[in-house]
Each structure stands twice: as C-alpha cells, then as structure tokens.
Image 1 (spheres, one colour):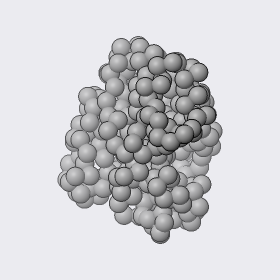
Image 2 (tube, rainbow, N blue to C red):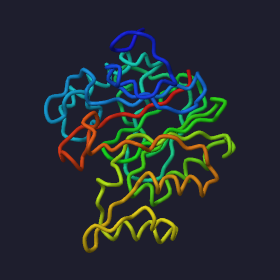
Image 3 (cartoon, helix red, strand yellow):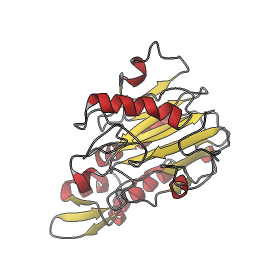
Length: 271
C-alpha cells in the first residue's frame, strides 16, 4: 500500500514534507524496522476551518465524524500495520504498555480506552501515538529495535516526571536508547509565568538555563532544553531532533497561536 503522494518511503529520510508528501519523518539513526512519522495539517482530510484539514484530536471541538474519518484515513495514508493506540491524554505521568492484541472491531480502533501520557511496546505492528499542538512529543527506541515508546510532554507532565516514568518502565539499557524530540513550541515563542519556572527550578537548579526573562513575572521557556536535562539525568545521551517551533511553522497545529485548533500525531511502530 503506497502512502499519499506515491513513491517509496525511506524510514531515515529527514523531513519528508519537503517532497510534498504531507508528513515529517524523524532524522535519527533508528534501525530500519522501526518506523516513525509526524502528521501535518496539510494532509488531505475531512476537517473544516479552524481544524483544517487533517485534525486527529477528538477533544478540541472538531466534528467527531470528521475526526473519525481522518483517523481511519491515517492507516492507509501511512501504510500503518494497525490502527494507532490512541491515548486519553491528561497531562500526567502514567505509562501504558501495549501488547500485540488486535482490535475487536472498527469502532475500537478509534477509541481512547487508556488514560496515559506515555506508551511503550515490544511487539511488532503496534502503532504508538500521541497528539500535540505545542506540547512536546518524544519518540524513543532501543538501538536494536526491540522496544519503542512515545511520550506526550506538556510542561505539567514534563515537570511531574513523565519522561522519567516512561524510561523506568523500559527494559532497554539507557546507553542503548535513542530519543527524538518532535515538533513543539519553540523557546522564543513560549512565554510562561513564574509558576512554571518555579516548578522546574524546584526539581533541578540547572533548569534556570531554560528560561529567559521577558517582562516582570514572565519567561520564555525552552521545552527542548528541559527535556534534554531530564534525559541526561536519566543517563540517556543519544538525543536527536528538537529544532521545530509549532507556533511559527504553519504545517503544525498550535494552540498558543490559534486557540481553537486541531492536533497532529507523532507515531512510532516496529515493523
């Protein structure tokens, strides 16, 4: 089954959106049988403005029928081996572990049956997924492709330790983990209040380097730096990505930019 736009999909190819295919492929040294991609709003879909066109978020105000159509279209568009395991994301630290069991019916393939902000799998053909529109998505993989994970890290989950909770649940030694930081709001676009800065600095004093003062009581916040700090503290060093800004890049949904908007997906699976 060919993806939208035709042609072969090279797993290691960086930024496939440049060739007009409508999605982004992480540029990281994951093994060939670990597949990953990030959808964009430019993929053909059923959602109307302000969610146009390929919104995959079921809880952001879009027509549920349009979201269901987009989720169904995602499988053939990316030649996925199964429907993604959709999470009910709550900005927490719970980690879901998925086996290789198939869905009972088509309706189950769209259901968000698990409340979690991270997921991991060790079986082939299990598609992990998180939805974001400024929060930071992280993809993780063992360097031999035996285990994968995905994390949704808004500032609350990041501060509360969702990265650490996920890594602890993984069996892969830390020096064999690969991590890709997906599209999130950039350090020059994300202004936060003192309570956000205080939450991180209370955990680690070095977090001050991720904040730049803007106006009294407000700071620019670098989610990418904060995530790298947390990963380094877990002795994870093989980190890639972290060079997008969803607020200024029109390919991605951005809640901070648009308010009422959709969600894009970051996906990973073992082929």
